Image 1 (tube, one colour):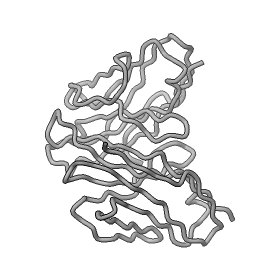
Image 2: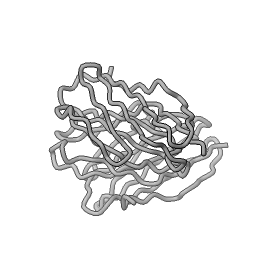
Image 3: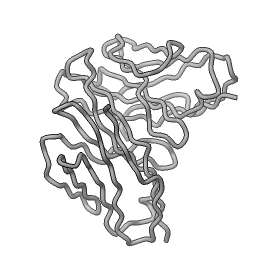
Image 4: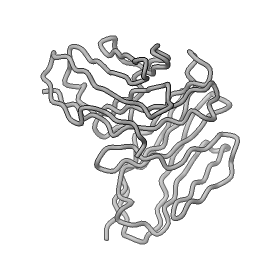
Length: 119
Length: 116
């Protein structure tokens, strides 16, 4: 099976706390991409990061950081010093190759984690 | 903003009716993918169009159909609407050059469909 599991349905923190969102994936592809998206109440999916399966370096972007561990098939997302504006639903996604045409792919999403940051 | 637009923003239909949703892809993109997001769930892949041809399909019945036009904009048509079709419908555009390294999908704001 090729799927993404986000075990945390909802997380609630107080502003300035650090929070980690978990993502575990399954795939039979040797080359794949992992993503994190943010979905505010407006509904639009906001792209946060795309990571190649061959690149296991952790990445930091401002208050955001990502920990990719191929050995445990995990791609966790940490927000440091959370803010109220971080409140949203966060989705982890895995790209799956579409056989029909070389280079084409679809995204498989987890069910999302709803993060609420309280002032 | 991604440059991907969708219309309409909201839509209310009754069971059994037909609906058409529209998506304009980002400039330079030749591929459009459609996703259905039910309440409280992650988006699910419906199908993808590349240069006016269906390029892959998820687990959706044939009453979900699509079109892509020469300018790469796309339509999603749903016939015989059911209550469970109520969802946010997202389209994503990408530039399929044959290299997955450059096929990032950019999402539009979505169309929220309510079926009564």
